[in-house]
Image 1 (cartoon, one colour):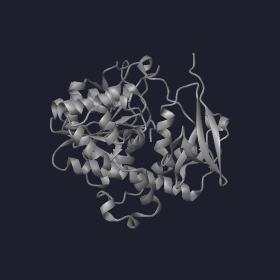
Image 2 (cartoon, rainbow, N blue to C red; image 1 turned 180 degrees about the vertical axis):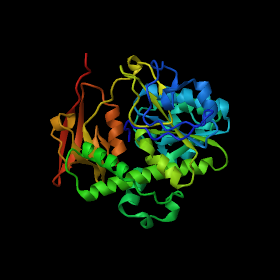
Image 3 (tube, rainbow, N blue to C red; image 1 turned 90 degrees about the vertical axis):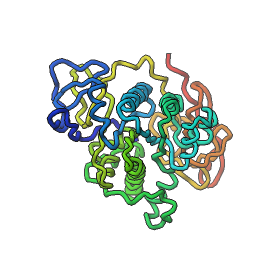
Image 4 (cartoon, rainbow, N blue to C red; image 1 turned 45 degrees about the vertical axis):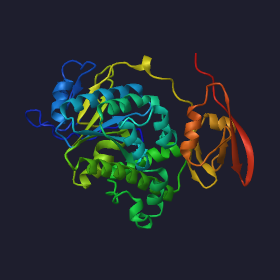
Length: 383
């Protein structure tokens, strides 16, 4: 999930207790890049804010996964937190529990980049360009800051959401307990995301499974964060903005687990009116215009995909997309892409991410019991 949302502020005790960012009132003048804005439009320096945040149990740093400036902001914030609280750990939404040995070996200096990416199965597990995250990973390695895999595999999320909690043996759940039920506003938000990506009227049962899977996702990350913070370590969690949505998502599950001392931080580029987002966060970091440094948009096939026993299931087609032009249809199963077998959605995401603009991607699909080849033509780069 990478929705641009913020969640309600909790008191940071800057002298007097701050009110929730509720929304933020506009202060005199617009904050400049490098400042933090908190309740009432008040601005703080990084040094001033980090001294307060470093006392928390968990600090959550939201991101849009493909935004280079978001990851640079995360790196700077992590370094500032570490200066105030050396006993620290960095949690990553990007990798499932199975990748923990690779993270440990990376921090210990036992793996180079190529070996780490292979042993963590980064490209299949996450799909987003590792170059966006490597500066953060190198920072952790240089400082010997433990890295923590927060996530679980899509297969386990799917089993817990579809088969039910008791159907999965306890030893396969990594100590994760059933999530607190979604509040109405969060359910509505997730239903809107489902409808947006499905591009169709979905089966109500599919919607319920989607919501259940998102709750499992939130709970898995919250459980890992809470467990790591139990010994007094500051845990900084990196995750998509959608998991910090308006007090729901991971913050809500942390509350249910009994860990209430958590904070949420988000980057923000002020618009012409300098009004902060209507949704909420504990503090907003003011970014300048970093668009000249943003990598080009990755190639997009334009499909909603899911798991299938024979490959990757096409669950929806975006209008005007490469997939629609290629003749892909809902219900198709993509068996191979560029000759590579497709066993899970991340396989297809990884192949598409490496596709060169202006080239063809051969897809071997199964439709109605028959195999056929489809050629997806990716447009050339814009001038």
